[in-house]
Image (cartoon, rainbow, N blue to C red; front, side, top):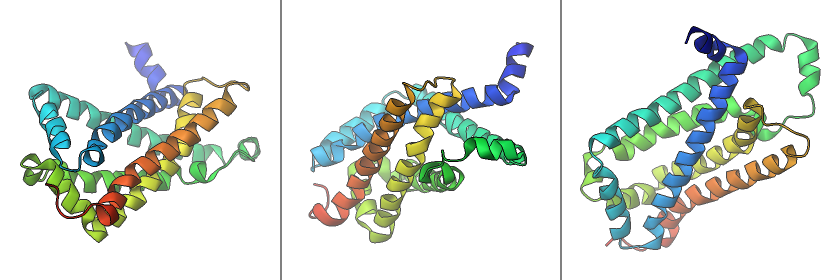
Length: 220
């Protein structure tokens, strides 16, 4: 156990855990997006409400899952900060700077910024829905009313593209952190990362756009 903890505390160990937590969070985002699509598939809101109430039916297991998800987010955030500090120290060495030259992208250069913005978005999202008692009375109605409101709608719209930008580099980086890097594999992972980033950005952006500009009247 001691050796395992020492390994996880090493730079390589932290990168592996960082990669694993990142991929697990991507899995959660996929499930979350697909569940939310019920809001658009069924404008009445009944399908989404049934989905939410079905999840609530898990009772104590849902609480355990929520704590587990919170632990994933917290672990990912803490490791991101620690690794960033280590990288800043490593960049004092000119060789490190040259070795990474030419591999930068908008996503890679803004990982800390987009990560911070996503954290803020998460706090807002939980406040708007998870910790609002009205959500459990009529989930679809509250989501519609919240996203139809211009200030919230624009905030969620911007957040969608921030998530996409973060994942445009984060997805590929996760595999690199796990040691899954190869000259033949890397181009495919990079394209998959960009595709996944676009999928999430467009997918999550669809909700505020739909409720601000397309949906007519309250959810029935």
